[in-house]
Image 1: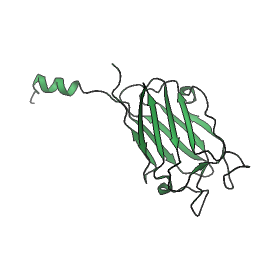
Image 2: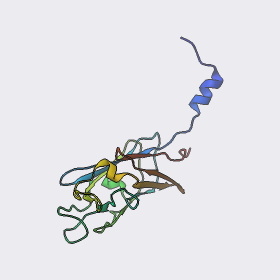
Image 3: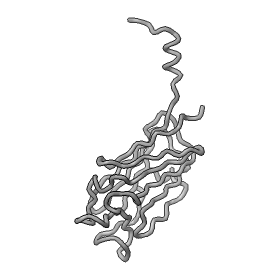
Image 4: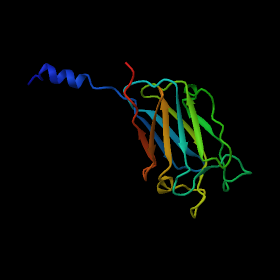
Length: 167
């Protein structure tokens, strides 16, 4: 077995660690689901994650009450995993296009998942959101004074690459 020269090993071993965050949207009936996972190699301290539908292909909105902008079935925001990671529950009103999650911290491998109803305002089936209808929705993560932004594509997920972890 060949041994790597010490300089090469040192360079490889000294590579910075990152806290990549994956955000997935899963269409479901009667509830849609978001899963946010810290897939990186280090913890994230206090942070703010924003899901923004304003630029989405289908004019997506959150449908959280039966008396507002949504169509037929509605579902309020409900945390299903990682509630203890949130500083507080977000306030999402019917017809909103953004959801802001304030996190106390987000450790490696930890997840935050929530259910809610998402409707489109431009498609033919307003109660069903296909993957391409979420195209161009953005997700941003602000932590340690830096913001990472990514745009959702046809797979209805994004990975936010953050700045190198603090030592």
